[in-house]
Length: 288
Ligand SMILES: C[S@@+](CC[C@H](N)C(=O)[O-])C[C@H]1O[C@@H](n2cnc3c(N)ncnc32)[C@H](O)[C@@H]1O
Image (cartoon, rainbow, N blue to C red; front, side, top):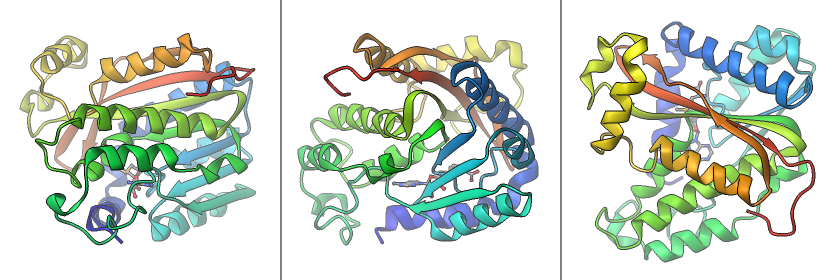
């Protein structure tokens, strides 16, 4: 396995015991997911969780009340089995697991071995690999899909494959966001609801996140974004722009985003946004 993916798995092992510090974040993600399942997807009872990891950011008992069928997707087989056991132990009747690499980039020739960015071929090859990656997820469609704090990890892992001064880096980032939104849509039946939760800046570069009252977060975070203080590829305005493009193309029927909140990971804080959308009931001729 490529070291960048191994790092994700090690991180899941490290954060396994941090469930308590996630409590407030977990309540927010779960609340927004329930809202999307009921309001956008008409009381949906099937859910796909992309990059489920330890499932620390969803409340299992609330999931159990809303959903009968849950489909877990991650590269981490250990995290998948732990999450399945936890959900089954509280009475969820149908929990399916799929070990799946979401970008399609790490499977391409050479990438699985080369940890040195200069040993990999150009950004164009990575973009092509992402575009060619057939999604086997679509075989198991749900009425709801959630991706929580996964996009930043996907982008971070892929960017570790290329030199940071590589030409066309911006195109690669746009492609990774496009691909992730397309994967979410692939997971949905027509009319289904998607919730993309995305972390975009941490207290390591914005220490005020430790002290700011929640009412001041939107203003301060907008300023941080203007100053370029956000995770590469995770500018919330850029993500929402791509979502709006899908709406214009008729692939998505409704889209919106929430006010930011804070996710505590032990003594670190991350600012997070949630984007929601409803997949069009009828797919237009041109797909995203
Ligand atoms: C920060 S965690 C998300 C938090 C997680 N929901 C939890 O409660 O632990 C990101 C998840 O995405 C998964 N992931 C990262 N890169 C991936 C990839 N390329 N394909 C599939 N899953 C990936 C990681 O294994 C991890 O479980």
